Length: 74
Image (cartoon, rainbow, N blue to C red; front, side, top):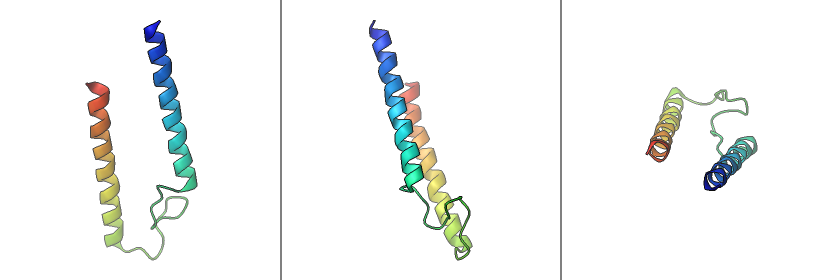
């Protein structure tokens, strides 16, 4: 009985997080200001700005993966 409640609560929490992420992406709250709505670089962006934004996005993804990996696998 307790394991069923735990599984249902995990599924519910994952569903809520998935819905929130989709909502944020569609509303543009995590949008890169140098990209258009299709994810292409705008014409007035220099290579340096592209490199810096890609660095921040990759490092943020790695940091999030490490944090979530600690919670999931421990």
